[in-house]
Amino acid sequence: MSRSHQLRKLHGRTMEALCLLAALAAVAPLFAFLWHLVSMGAGALNPALFTQLPLPPGEVGGGLKNAILGTLLVVGTATVVGIPVGVGAAVYMTEFARPRMAATLRFACDVLSGVPSIVMGLLAFQVMVRPMHHFSALSGALALAFIMLPVVVITTQEMLHLVPHSLREAGHALGIPAWRIASSISMRAAAPGILTGAILSVSRIAGETAPMLFTAFGNPFLSLDPKAPIATLPHTIFTYAISPYDDWHRLAWGGALILVLGILGATLLSRFILWWHQRGLNA
Amino acid sequence: MLACQNLKIEFDRKSVIKDVSLEFPPQRITAIIGPSGCGKSTLLRAFNRMHDLTPGARVSGLVTLSGKDIYHKDEDPVLVRRRIGMVFQKANPFPTLSIFNNTIAGLRLSGLRNRALLKEAAEKALVDAALWDEVKDRLKSNPMSLSGGQQQRLCIARALAVDPEVLLMDEPCSALDPIATAKIEELMFRLRERLSVVIVTHNMQQAARASDRTAFLWMGELIEEGETEAIFTTPKKSMTEDYITGRFG
Image 1 (cartoon, one colour):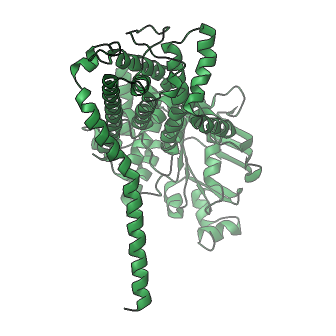
Image 2 (tube, chains in turn purple, green; image 1 turned 60 degrees about the horizontal axis):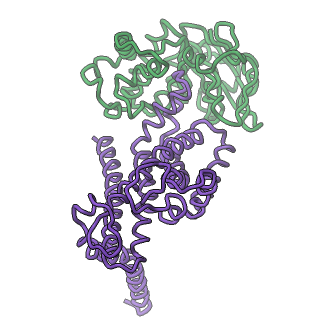
């Protein structure tokens, strides 16, 4: 074997090793973060975390019941608004709009998906908090709906684009009305993908903190009134983490663990739906 | 009867079909032949207004069914397509619907709800498409489990269930083996008894054996049309003769 050949092989090996190192560095934060989260948060994980309200500073114990329920309410409301509108917009863009119209709308969604979440919070503040003169769960949900909309539109559109055009043609050739082709043929074929995208967009907004600062605002008490300020998990974690009390730090870790487990669960669920669907198609 | 007069089709101002006039008599199979890219499929798709769905496509001239202009502004393309069915080159059953629901998709998704009527229509269409015996025990199965030829016959059944007057077939056998092709041709002869069939094919043997009339298209122009036997034995134009004898195309 010639010298230059061996040199080239060595070069190849070195590059491969460097890339492997980069790949490890890329996933290292995940493991570091999981390790910290579990070691710090597991101690806080007990029934009280889910069933009790926070105690005043200085008192040991209490839980995050208000923030857990608050997050469910705010994220739930955002989902109920964001998903139908997002899916509807994507169906319009893919199935009905003229190409130029569709491209324009898609560009707007791409821009929208890059807008920082705090700016979306500001928008919700401007259109809801200011006219109503107080912070509210509803304005928090509105901010989250703004954030999730472009995500839902883009993923839904990607999924609808995967449906072969020949199926739509077959529908038209049978004299099926266009709205029926969209709902019963295109959307049905893309349903698992649309559902997956919807779940991922929910987990995307569940952890948003910045827009909550001046919309949902936070609330140390239990409130399920959509027109009143409400506690959410990410915002509570933020408040507790920067507080000077050890017991609040413990609760913040516990809250972070719940949040991450919820998002992890949602991601696994979406993977499972796709896998289950693929299995059905191959059977 | 389906007919077209001075039909012109353009895509983004590029002319694809130039001034074609043709008649498709009922109870006849008409084959449209010609080299690749001559506009056969484009012509066929004008007959059920499929070009309405293509941005940039422009159809001018007259297409009539029973003497009425199907492109008239008061005609709903959705209703036109129920009278003029279509089968595509590649079998395209709906993968999310069962064999049964594929067969009646045109009826059900247009609003027919009556279970008994739907069942009756499905059986009739599958019998007409010579598929009933092969699928009657697995109507609830996924259509993707069928063979290519069966899938194409399912697509024919699906088109027949809507009870059209004309069936347009765009190279329906080009992806099928000779046995599956023979079944489809047999089927065409039976369908001829009640509707008119227009088939686009690049296979000259198929045109010769499975059609009553033949139209030869070249570069978007109709060169010659007539009884299939005459076209294949005594063509009037030298270009037709050159094409069917394989000298070009």
